[in-house]
Length: 221
Ligand SMILES: *Cc1c(COP(=O)(O)O)cnc(C)c1O
Image 1 (tube, rainbow, N blue to C red):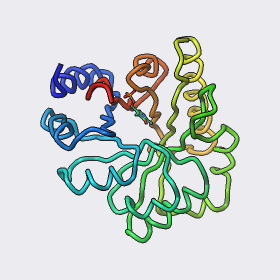
Image 2 (tube, protein in one colour):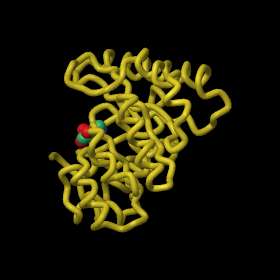
Image 3 (cartoon, rainbow, N blue to C red):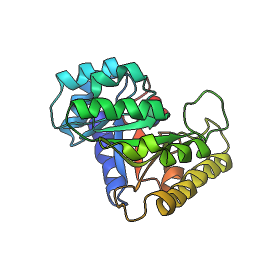
Image 4 (tube, helix red, strand yellow):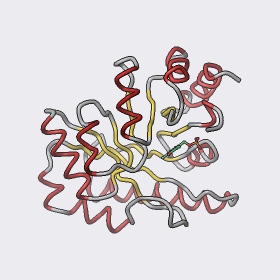
């Protein structure tokens, strides 16, 4: 199946249930992205700063760019002028740097806290209590140039559907709790970025509002 066909059919599937599609285009060429773009896709995700910057320079300016991979503090400055959403905030220090660089660019950058839900030690993310610590910190409360609009999680890479279900369930319960305790009346805090090619159908059952699909759209990397 072509990239365009994949986009069309997945978009149709997701639009009816109001789940947003982020096309994860890491390692894929500008031509591949253009094919998806011409099929109507506007939200693209990358996991490396340099690749993201190059593609942003090359491709249409109405693309919405998502950073979905780990972000080093010293690289925030390269994307602060244009990035639309950072899914992978995993420390207060990183959030402070994003806030600082956003201020320099006179904008507010939307961010997700990346929560560690997998039963593996290879993935980045905050433990539940670390996320709460950030939300309670004086530093966070002073920030004016970032806005936390949701959470991101990556489930374990496992054959066990039950385990994946449990991990997505935990993230979605945590989201509910945070909404009540820290985002009362803040309508913008309402996104859960969970689900990749192998598990997005499960993620949707557990309340995902954004799925990040790479290989399902662009083929194997
Ligand atoms: C690569 C990547 C994806 C997409 O993975 P696929 O399995 O190809 O759909 C989603 N999220 C993150 C954080 C990624 O790095």
